[in-house]
Figure 1 (tube, helix red, strand yellow):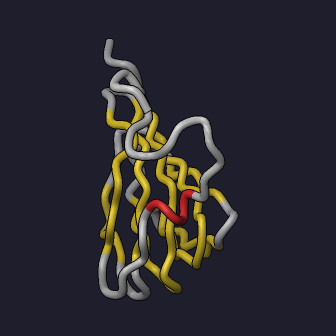
Figure 2 (spheres, rainbow, N blue to C red):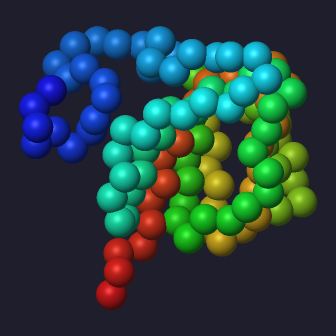
Length: 116
């Protein structure tokens, strides 16, 4: 991984399991930012069982790829159970929250509008 790498903190040019990059700790939310730019962010998260991320909004669409475990994801008034291997899009500017039904790991990719 060179100094000019755009995706940080994970090995390049080799096969990896993203689940191995962010450990699940009981009673804790952990994260590792891979990319943080004005129009895109990529972050690995792990949430211990029972943990959550409270209701909030984002100015961009967020793609959540659940890597392991089970998350309850609330988008507006709708609840969704999302299992390891499944993906859901959280639309921009719609309130959303996450709760760990079973400890889970996820890759979050947020794509924001270009500044005009």
